[in-house]
Length: 199
Figure 1: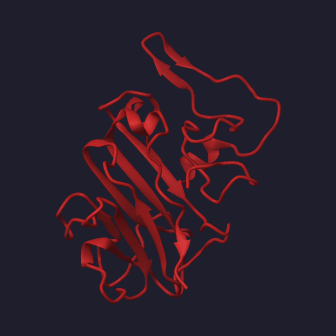
Figure 2: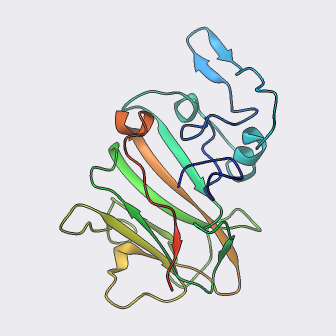
């Protein structure tokens, strides 16, 4: 799910390139001495800064630093496992392995890819996560795996907290946020699945 190059997977962006080091211009490393830009790699697969600031209009050092248990990390998904952009009329799912690496909470939010605003649907809050407000918390299965569905209508047998409503007339993208991310995130030992089309 978390790769950036065109030939390695549909997930496109973590601003620091945590799951792929092929970004030309990730945002600078923030240190006590100040901002330290990464050197150019000599090839261009994605301008991470431009993409990041399209969807996120503010930034704090805690979003850009590699600090276990502090700040947050945003993982932005714009395409499914087959490299197709998300279609609001279709059903997709993603599986989060057990022990989601966060010390505070995690959350998926769905956005309108034309406005960058949260997707406006009858569900009102296009999100799923570990918190129980403003919608029920997502629930893991007996193995500790949490599956989240994205679709215009709630799939049969899927609990409300594990479903985010989409608009059949619109495309969308989603952000997985980890608040106070833990070491398995940075070490890449915990990885969600790709977001897959449900046939």
